[in-house]
Length: 141
Image (cartoon, rainbow, N blue to C red):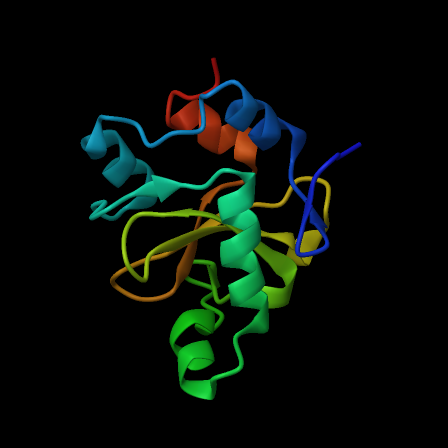
């Protein structure tokens, strides 16, 4: 069971372990990061639990319609998900300004997919779960 909630949502144990063990950090190989996220990192940051809590609280509380429209996106069946529900997500990092990385809990709380807001439009799924992302980035050991 999860021992940390952010915005009322459970942080996956694998992510908590990576944070505690110092593995949850941006890889030095930005070509690898670009391959995984399909976007070049500008000023990448992977958040610890306090960063997730602060960024997600702001994210959940956002009420400006223009800001919401800019960040929520639209469903895209060709490159899903395309959109996100801020109230059902945790921000876990970013690749730079306006490039958030999130856990998307719309399908359930057990294994949320990892999604990313691209610079070229819309949210894309970059991994089916945090374990897969850690493996793809070489942060699983």
